[in-house]
Length: 165
Image (cartoon, one colour):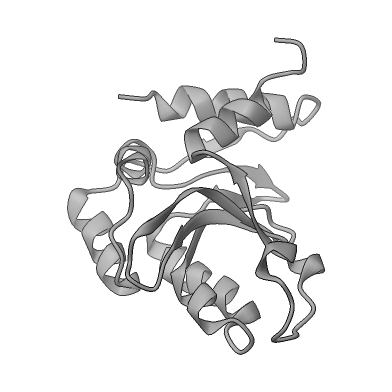
């Protein structure tokens, strides 16, 4: 099993090399909490999601006395998913219904999994870039929701590794 805490710490250090704000890890989630989240979105999350949340139910950093969550805790995740889906629900409803973001960049952008209308997961990790979204039905979804890496594990390892390693 992947050591998510170690990978997230390395990600934090690579993404924030000069930041004195310490990383924060939530306690492990229960299988029941993960199942409740899956029921709330009507989709079965992949194994890496389960492994991640069974080790850390949330990951972020202290900022101005508050926790800024990057990996959104399960208790807040359904609301986070709904908020991100809301951006393009009116123009791209099927796409919005299948987007399950759990990584929040705290700037309006997010990363997560994408599921087809049938409920099958589209391979990879997808990034929603809110500044690229134009609120137009005919906008190509790849303009604002694009494949960013093959998995969340690869995503945080790629960002957490300084160039040249």
